[in-house]
Image (cartoon, rainbow, N blue to C red; front, side, top):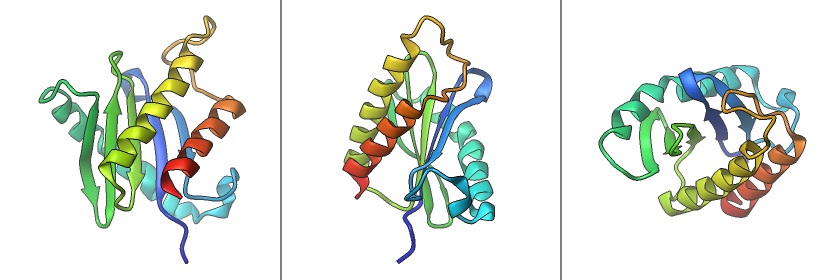
Length: 142
């Protein structure tokens, strides 16, 4: 059975990625998944930023739902009050599950951003943050 497609990107101001993780792989090493697929997933996620910007102005909700599709892949988005975008590339998951996952990611993000030495444009490199995100993904997407 193939590993599920599940990639998360947190995009800061001026559309700079501040955190990226492949949640579909079982290990934290990037070499375990096909390199071409990783580049395709990054391309699809970053290309969906325009769709996020369009939907951002049509709803007051933070969870935007599915904003873009590419072949059998879907991109779901969550936008914070500070316009930090959480993008999840998946192969068709429940919207309620994704909404709950985004809430947990947002809570973890808030704990990181409350650090006085972190700015909204600083890349998140914390191993603890990544393990919390992986744990949330395991809980919601087993």
